[in-house]
Length: 400
Image 1: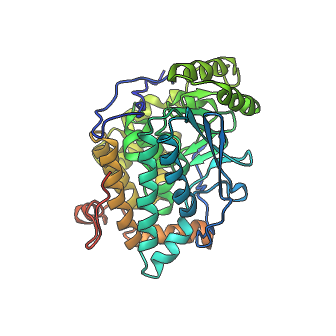
Image 2: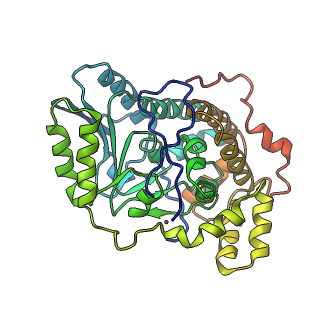
Image 3: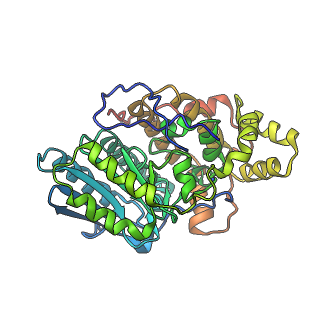
């Protein structure tokens, strides 16, 4: 069984939290990109996110089902102050985050609008989006009120940031988890440099480089979710959480555990689907560079190894190298430091070729033929790689 080092509980933490040793119990074909486009936040519609107060419970509903609840700046600008207001309200007993429509919790972020602006040399929309999104991720991580995310359906990119840093993450048989950013010239952000290295056996690095999809119970077994329930009981679970009177964290844990234990879906296989590949993942992906990983896969020559190699050859070489470095650094950093590092990387992605080009090729024109610059791993020099980790001139650091 793959041992999971575990995603630490982050509620009510000090700013400089040390790495947790907390362990969670313990994925399907590689991911195709499922990040959403054509979702301009210029109009700031009033109903893209809904807020409810039921007794002491506070409920946030991502309300863009036709866009798979993709996260835009409008939603972020509404969620952040509302969470702050609720946290400061002594009547608040818990916060639930969920998505509308039944297909997705949140499939990603508003990447089309920010890359379109970047292609025109306008970087501030993307900078504002990244800054606001990462600030919200950190607020969720440090929320002192019990936070429960119902990650039912597609949960990718920005949706991961809205859930994985919370104390309670409830997946269902419909959950699809992936961080597919290397395919569009980006990198696994929203704290990916923090939580991905904390999955064992180089599982996080494998997921980050290949965009592999975890589904259903495997999301729980990998440690991404803390509980699993059947999607059909989510309304009742929500009602039971709302009905709790002045619940302690243990009361909430006990209720979620009960629902988890009652869920039999996927129990016929009591191990992570990638278990049969854990030795291969560690042997082939335990490397000091992406070039070495490529060499390992080429020399191995097995059908599985060559499949992974072919998948990664389609990704942005720069994104692969940035991702490898960020996860290596993030393994020894606190969450705030990781998000601050990711802000620098994101701002540089806006200013370079691959992110706008990847979005164009996969999500706008859909020719699936991006022109990466540089086009090969050797061409991504150390100087180029290091430049992504330096704040562009004139910008202010993200300070959490």
